[in-house]
Length: 100
Image (cartoon, rainbow, N blue to C red):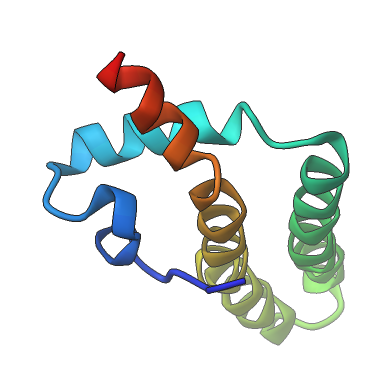
């Protein structure tokens, strides 16, 4: 499985405007299987839950607010490439459907 950090790097979307790339990725994400959606949702939880746990510690230690911000910044760096990579394999079926 290839990891795509940008939608411009996905072979089926190269050369399309951003709005069209996002629309096609959204349609492809709807075709994800249940195990794929589960893995993606667990990954999202693994990023978001520690950030909220750190926010709860702000009363005791204000530096945990900085750590929470850092963890929130990890969300697009970690989750989006996995989401793009899982959705990329369903783009072929969408492009075949568009041609018919």
